Length: 195
Image 1 (cartoon, helix red, strand yellow):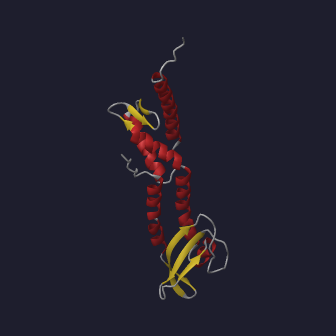
Image 2 (cartoon, one colour):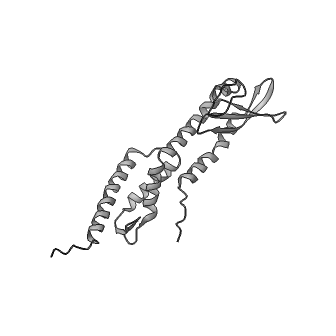
Image 3 (cartoon, one colour):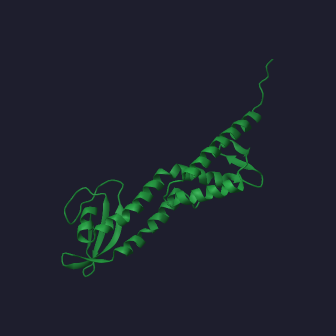
């Protein structure tokens, strides 16, 4: 049976974050450039600098502001330095927190996936943890800890770092899981006959 993808997978969390970009774009409004009215149509952060700013000619640029002429529908790619000059110094700053959240989401991907895996693998009614490659291991996670792990997973999915307390709880449970797996393996390893 194939395991269903979690709503907290890195890809789904990144998609939720990317879906919030139009809200930032709406805040920008109209502005004057080349004696015409323009609006911000789209914003992108490329993995590598590759484009050229159509206002100043700077190349390569990584952060792209795509602006639309409201009269002609012409689109232009503009870099973050020029968008500050032609629209508002605040525009690029509005996207900085979003980009920080995206970078944190990427950096915290392994932790988010491990916390999600723990939550999804734990069977509270049986006090069992399904460990990949090992099977079901007797293990207990308190209801309070499960709630804290769910909050941690939510926080990580939104592109924020885990709090100090959340990281401490995670480290504690990691040690406990390792100990439980080692005990389980020891208890299920046949003794060698010493004849």
